[in-house]
Image (cartoon, rainbow, N blue to C red; front, top):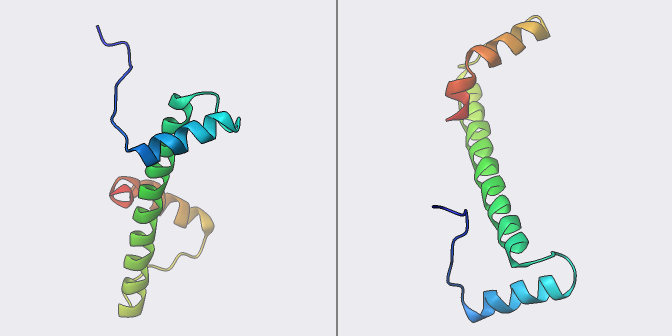
Length: 88
């Protein structure tokens, strides 16, 4: 039965950092420190993906490959219709 707990090995430097964060009261326990670190990693990946989308859109704009929308609802519908491809 999986209890949702996993063991990980960390360097002495990381172990000290985790202990300092808990001792300072920033986090209640080691698991909260690890959860915060993983959340930050996930957020960083999302930011990287957004930056890539922006760079791609900028390149498309420079090439003159873009769509014009006369109404904000048109833009919203375009985003909804293309949401899956925009997530990649």
